[in-house]
Length: 551
Image (cartoon, rainbow, N blue to C red; front, side):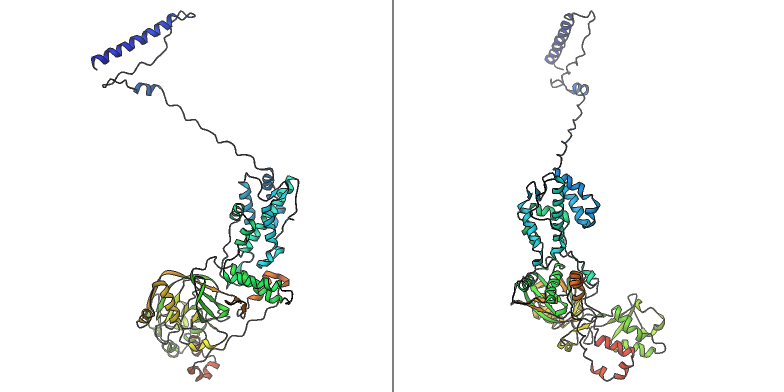
């Protein structure tokens, strides 16, 4: 410690002691002098600056103060009454569970006044919502499905205001669900409808309509934006609004049920997509909202009906192999192979149609198998590429649980049929080379020459850079580009059951499905009428491959 620093330290100590003694002398009420404990000044450091270590150890840090948040403001009296009324079993009995949960969540967090009701009655926004729901029939919906409060209601009590608020909110939620396709589960009509409407959560609907400037515009925005839907709706309005044209109830219901099927499709079909409308026997390619390609198709028989769903196309196969599907395996090939005592004849059907056999992925000699005593489903039967292959030169893969795809066919003559319910469920395309060229030009920029060069090769798969949405639908009424609506035969008999679901006892009578077209019989089959007439299973399998089934 330097000399100057030491002298300064001693001076401070002396001054401190003097002050303490002076304080003790002035104490008047005590003969005992108690010196208060004063921390000694910190000893100077080597740099001459007093150290603060002693102060730090003698004065512990103060505990942090916990500030409690202010209590939430009490809910508006009507909002509070809503919570109590939502617990009423009588109210809950007629409402959807999802809607009740949405109301509980929305109003449970609400501190503002109610959304629709005021002391003077329904707000202007509420009036607009009521008016829009009252116009439900113009959108193909059933007005009687919505239990609306009177727009002129002006309840004075808190409980009555809460009841009207709940009533309108439930009607809005139900309308939103129906507008999005939720009034009828598609599979209730038929398991063929493998479609799931895009419904919005009830709390989301309430939050969005609360934030919207216009409640009626918000409700209208929930309907499909597809041009076909709007064109069918305009036809519905024209039909209902023409006093000089008698209303055909079946035609009106057909329009409504086809509008409903549009609600089951994805909200966005894709800027470039493939649309297969099964009753129309047509495939379309749509780009930017415009149809740029239309081609004939063959679809499933009534027994093997083509299902309706959406899936992304991921690849195109040139010169594909064909794996015999389980239905043909069970119904056609198994009887041929499992006839006791006719081994040579049985396996000849495999040679006739150039089918090779595999077991657990390994090729085997079919003559080494005791076909009458094995489980045929454990074996795989594969048809090699070539002119005999039932898939032709192209296969368009959009993976799905139904094992359905689009493909070529060597039986081009079948496209001359008017009713083309001829396949085993998959979709055969007329002129598939044009279809493939269009898809690959869009996806890869390929020319037609590149596509045909691929055809000159063997079996190969071209994976698409971007998946192309494929939609399989069942529309028996389709709006035409130049106006008007064209109807198609109800080939699977689904309009009637759907009308029963939507209209109940008021459902119109719809005609039965048309009879399936007679398949073109090959010359080879014509030469063997006795074998087919006798139910020869080998001949039946040949018919299955070259006639009706084909996939």
